[in-house]
Image (cartoon, rainbow, N blue to C red; front, side, top):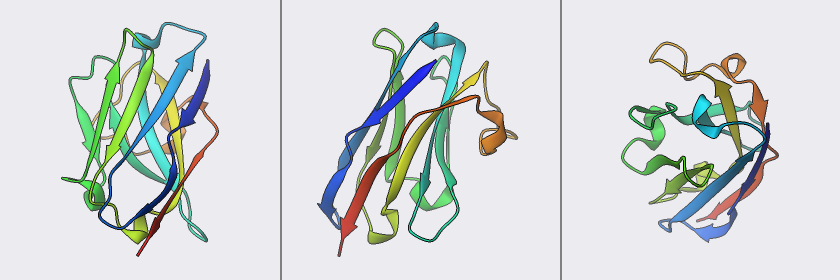
Length: 126
């Protein structure tokens, strides 16, 4: 399974940005998907996740109400719509895939994800 994230860039605080992740190699609908990020000098952290069907989404507290994860199984893609961006959202964003689904007790664990894409840089200026 190959994942490629794109859509990052330099924006100002309060702006919006949409990240995309294209997935190839296997049946996309077999995988739950997640977005992670790693800010400068910080450890990588989970941002959001979505089940294989798209029926459930999970978010870290700091992005709830601002970010939306979605997927299009017909296009083998997962998206992260980011609004009201803050300087603390500055990070390299990664998409990841997990064979099967994720649950409320597992979506946030890096080790749950089997495949990772390269990151895309998001920089939010104040």
